[in-house]
Image (cartoon, rainbow, N blue to C red; front, side, top):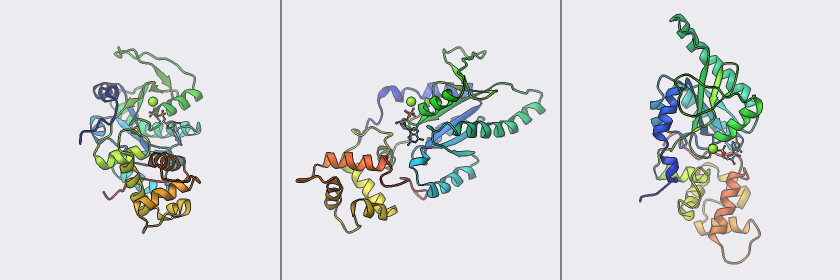
Length: 277
Ligand SMILES: Nc1nc2c(ncn2[C@@H]2O[C@H](COP(=O)(O)OP(=O)(O)O)[C@@H](O)[C@H]2O)c(=O)[nH]1
Ligand SMILES: [Mg+2]
């Protein structure tokens, strides 16, 4: 099955991202806290060796916070500093700066010992579509006075804004494509990283229902009175009826209702990955 997951202009960016990575010292790699594995692209981690990488788990307000701890531990054990954020909240800017400084301190000490202390640190935000990169950059620029800066050797027409006294952030984030297999595609569809029209609605709903039944059965029971013995048709009908809609079930409307409920926190904080898989 050949699926065109993302529009062509997104797929073109990989070479450009690798060029951007060369320019920076710190990478803020943004993950979706509802899909901490599916939103990761391990190839880019490989391409980023020698840089300081900070993992930003965004949309924690929609995530299953207690389960998220396991993923934080998983990545921390791999050596990545992690931060849970809500990119819309201006308070997180300070946390990002503080963690960056802490990490740079280690780096600067090493550089200093070689007599090469760096003054200006450059950084970039990377992540898959819709993870919240632009939101974070907007939040940062609301807090900081924008200061366009030119760096020697950087010929492309790009601008940087000042994140802290010595950290500059590239204004254009790097859009990464996730490593897509069928299951990752389904997970990323549920969280809205992949457009709703790409995968068949029924497949997405079936996957979401079986996943939620396995991991969050009480949420389905409370919200729609769905129980594990129900057939798929019964489950979809219950979701339809939860909006007091009458008559024959319109599956496209069920899709819209169900996915909106999931994305609007109507089923509470969720994580659609399994660490064990
Ligand atoms: N609930 C919630 N929504 C967020 C958060 N960060 C971003 N969003 C929303 O996610 C959507 C995609 O964000 P955007 O910044 O455009 O993603 P980008 O494609 O990575 O640049 C927008 O509707 C944002 O309002 C967050 O921390 N929590
Ligand atoms: Mg964007």
